[in-house]
Every structure is written in structure tokens, then in C-alpha cells.
Image 1 (cartoon, protein in one colour):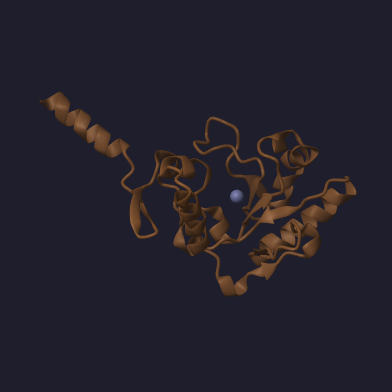
Image 2 (image 1 turned 60 degrees about the vertical axis):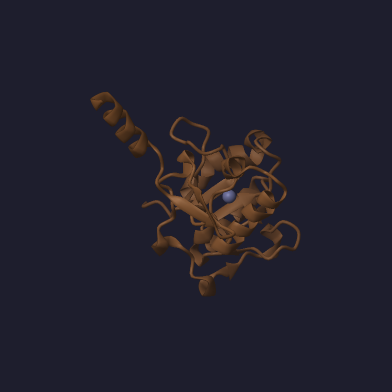
Length: 188
Ligand SMILES: [Zn+2]
């Protein structure tokens, strides 16, 4: 009895109590995203986003970022270019609504929500909603073997960029070597 009670309590505590609503349906937040909801104070003010210059954007897509992130990214990309490294951004700011739309599109093709959320953050959990995250043009995890990635591993921290979902034991989310987040310039 006591053991049953303890195990029931343990299961309750271990499961994530967070839910996320997609297309009016509430889904439990998978374990790997549990506790990782973006703080509301970090969500970008849409009216203050600035456009990334076209030479750093994939094709002619309009990519918007929080101003300090844009400035740091441009400065980093200019320096990288001197080392013959071309930094091209595929995705920057995305609204919560757009994140929901991305998931809904995948649900509509018959994909399972658990599988979708392995690769795509639930709405409210994506760093892209802060305007401080970028996805660089990549070809899957092969990107991790590219000179761009090796350059970033060496230099990005000095420009205030960190790899949010690295390939190590501290990370419960699928490895995304192309995803970088602007944490701010380190103190000199
Ligand atoms: Zn990303």
C-alpha cells in the first residue's frame, strides 16, 4: 500500500504537468521540453524587431531579429567572412502563432505529436520567439562537420552566441548544431 502510494506519487512528480494548446487541442508537453517554457519577459516585442541585411539571409526571405542580436550577428558574420566563412541565416524571429502553425502543418500530414515535438519546439518553448535565436543554413547534423560549425565552436562565444542544443549529456533535446542563441556579449 505504502509502496503503491510512493510509486504513484513518484510517477505524478516525474510526469510533466505542462500542456500546450495546438489548434484548440491541449497536448501534454513531452519530458524533454518540460520546464523549458520561455519566460514571458523574454518574448520579443514585435514592433522593435529589425531586419537582417539581405546578404546574410537565405534567398530573399525577410528575416527579423532583436536589435542587439542583429548587430552582434552582422559583426560576427563580417569577421567570419575574413576567414572565408559565410554565415547565412535560414530562420530568425518566429511568433508563437507561427510555431503553432508549423506544428499544425505537420499534424495535418498525419504525423504523431510526440514525433513532431522531438524536432520542433512547442509554441511558447521556442527561443525563436525571443528574436535572439538563429538557424543557419544547414544540411542536417552534417552541419556539425562543416567549417562554419567548427568556426562557430571556436569564436561564437566571444560574440555572445551559444549553442542551445549541443551534443552532450546536459541536453535532452535533439542536437541542433545550426541553432545559435544570442546571450549577450560576455563581460570583458
Ligand atoms: Zn532554431
